[in-house]
Length: 335
Image (cartoon, rainbow, N blue to C red; front, side, top):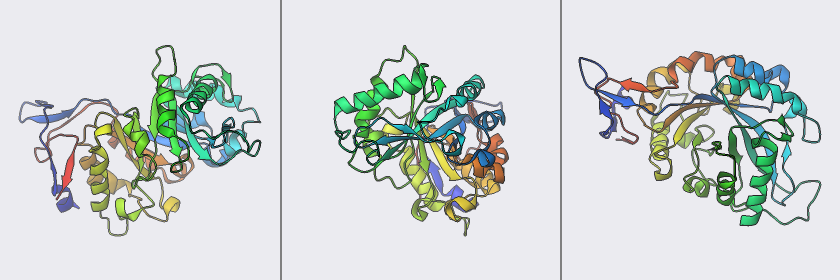
């Protein structure tokens, strides 16, 4: 692995500064988020409460999953599985838990999942227009982002994460723009996207330049994931370099999405914590738009202890790199 790491050449950066008295160092002075995690689709006995997740101190972003957005224009429906079921059932029990998380400096985002027609209505106009996008943005604001009473109680979530979309059905670029443009009394609404490392559907969303967090799933596809059998990061590094080099993400935060255990993906893309800390993160963290790690999911993380094993190696603030073999920049080329 050392030879593969050394094979990465990073371009020179204008951010080089002196961080010590002995040699020049390279500083990444964009605050990083740390560890993000999915929560909401397991039983409470498996992933515990949202408050308990935030009380660990391991996470900086919680992605609630999921809010189903229907192609036929029906109102979205919240599905938080065993915690409080579907939207028809009250989920206001989470109001105090969400506010607790936010009081700890943890951002809470609602994840959207594009679904087919709602069972309640199969006759409405599909969400394929600018007007429909504005309608959805208004719904999200009124029910999840404004602090008004909604399915989760009177909460003002920190943002929206687009998790699952279909190709060419809903106009997600228009939806992202509408959410970004919706009045929020000056409060920042964070926008996230969770594409696979081989992206088929998120291109238009990324090109809006409005995504703050790109939570890339570097698993399931061996062509762009870590080879856990051979402990080989070549494909992962090549895919990572492509993502951080995207013009629309150079000033955003790109996350390394990982399964918290082999059981999630039968080993595909899983990186043992020691390998992550020693061989992978030292390379990825050289990118100015590196944001942290995304773990799937909270229940698996409880069993594996993955976040606890890596949290001290996933910084949440500015860092200085004093290894002259890795000049700091936001792009890397694998030779």
